[in-house]
Length: 264
Image (tube, rainbow, N blue to C red; front, side):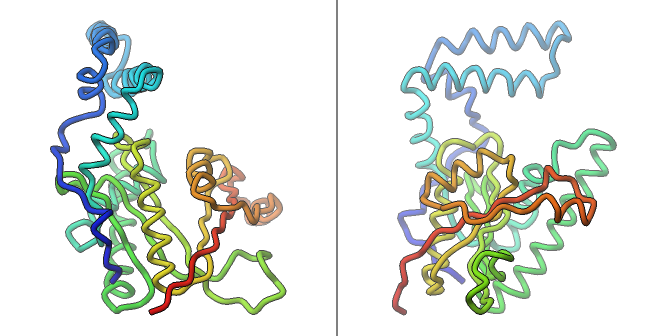
């Protein structure tokens, strides 16, 4: 199991404090946004969940115009703890990945979401017991705030993408998988830190490079990897998805980053 260094560990923080509330303290002008949201909800013009997202977006734009967003990022990031996943974290990681990769849930929302979370739970539990606890090259890392899972990433070994380097013998390479961050805790550096930890894990394994597969239209994730020095190395062909009659919105691109070799 990978030992996370102290520079990735921080103190806990009350999870109930939300980005919107702190934005009021940092920028009093955002009070107008909350009044506007309250009036819309009270008059039935906007559902509460949509209202919350709307106010977060507008507040975020106002904060970004000032320097409050940077202050907020520092405030939240200093309260996040990064550590190895244990069995008690699996439910939280499963719910997080379900929302990030399978949501939003519309029709029969409760049953869909329950089934999705259960699928992730069974997968994570199996990999944790069969790979992590067995001492194989597989790591599962969580970011927590006051004991609540707000971020998750897996690192494991898989064959490199087909067509990446046909001149060499196929050998398993390090991969980043299931990188997810809670919607209320994005854009404060949690995702970047999880990727940095993933790279450190792969370096500890003496891997030469690390891959990440991303949906081609997931521009947020693509931007994150590019900002950390990952290079686009391969795009999936549309012919593959036509052959297997899969949705072309699932087309993936592959990023790769060379790693520093560590001596054991």
